[in-house]
Length: 193
Image (cartoon, rainbow, N blue to C red):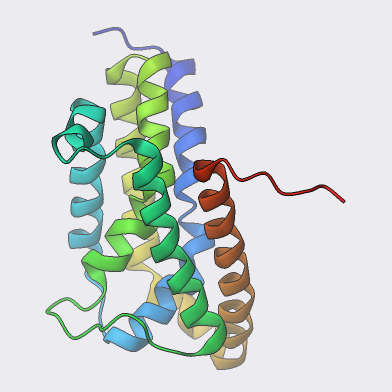
């Protein structure tokens, strides 16, 4: 096991940027408003389990279902697109009536452990030692848990108007991310003009 502090920092920063849990706060608050409750430990542990499965087994796991990483990313882009549409239009595409509401879907997957972050884990494996990625991943999961745990305080701090504005703004951002993810994995080239 070869631990390298700089590699851990590099992996941490890449994963932090791609998971983007601070940027997901408005989405989490919206899901919480619809489902009534979010379980931070459950969401964190399920996300970690998904990440670990892809860190260890990676493309072989997708290969069991004859799915390539690009197809997986496209499927994730549809879910992210629909979450964004919910936020912008105020419509409801996902039912949150299961025990735990939206804790597993869509928070743990695909919001935290989504196609982009899973693809990133697969990419990091090609460049860094698994132990360094694992430490960086565990640090990120600590931050995820901390943010999920504080959603009620953040909700009180922003108030209804602040939440409404954030929800609409991040809904549009989420739709744009979904479209980019779709385009990047389908090979569609948009004109620059």
